[in-house]
Length: 504
Image (cartoon, rainbow, N blue to C red):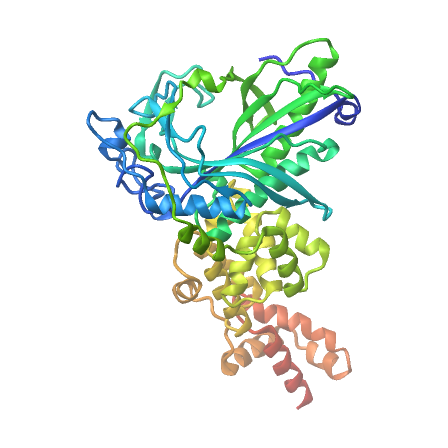
């Protein structure tokens, strides 16, 4: 495939105005699916289930199987709508979206069309420089997810070139809330930053509400990024493209930037933009054509005849409104103040997508500085090397337990890193790894003195140097003792014992 011609980003923004729009799909972590009693794979308890084991007749589209609305999912959807500043519809209804779905057995999706459960809202998004941008929300509607196809054969893992495909219906029927923004004007050079910050804000909201695991690498939260350009001074909107299912905040940022540069080059050369879906390729940082983008009429929406309208009582909406957590912008400012982080320290945590992990680790007993240190350094290093997300490797509770062992003197930082590796490899919690690997710091004076005597015997001149005032000479003995005891000696205590010996 020929590479697209790209225009310099700054030049593209001089000639064209970008207009953005986002559709974020949030998989709810309810116990069961949207319209059946099958276990929900978007709930972390069921994530590793074997293919086609979390299914019910409704999910498979079997004849005579009728859907039943998940009340827990409705409550979660209302909470999310309220957190987005939306009005909650006194009555909303489901519709059938007719489309060829090879991974939805009934060959249509139950969604909401002209009567969504939440509409007309807005959310404040904070950019890296502290600027706050208001993103208008058009609607948030309930629907079900499709299953998953695995393409076998070929070199890319995509359908092109594959020999055959396997379908897993576990994800079919997973409860979704789709959040659709209104067109976002005035983004200008900040368009990629707004894209990233918006998805981060949605993730923060759903995590605070507790309604989704929001693991983008697992598809719990996915973003379709719409981008169009119009020449400066033109009122008519340009033709948009929709880059589908982008599953990381950094990728959303890159995809928006790429589409601006790609579309600008086409328009500047006198070409036209095709209204289509596009695929994002993480490895190359490019998009490629998908299918022509359908309009609503093409889906032949009509009311779902097997489901009654959803009419939540005002008392329920009021209770859910009272239970809302802080807005992300307010929460970040409070946490930054509470933790005493400098701007660059706090921004680093936010940009790494680790705010929730650090907050949970502090709640589990660690100091903010210690929580930040572990997540931003060692855990992130290991995650990057393995191509995984930090939150996949270890829990906040385990990190707090690890730091407690350091604070108590049971572990040095060096030993703690070995313990962390054991936790990540599945050997148990930190205390269990310490016991099984025998990694606790040796603080018994008898054992330390024996090791010191052995080190001094190999370096007989060290003690004279210390007595002559060259205290730094003790470092050689400390190093020898640490090596002999595989790093498990208390270095501070070793130093004390050496100096005591020298004073005798």
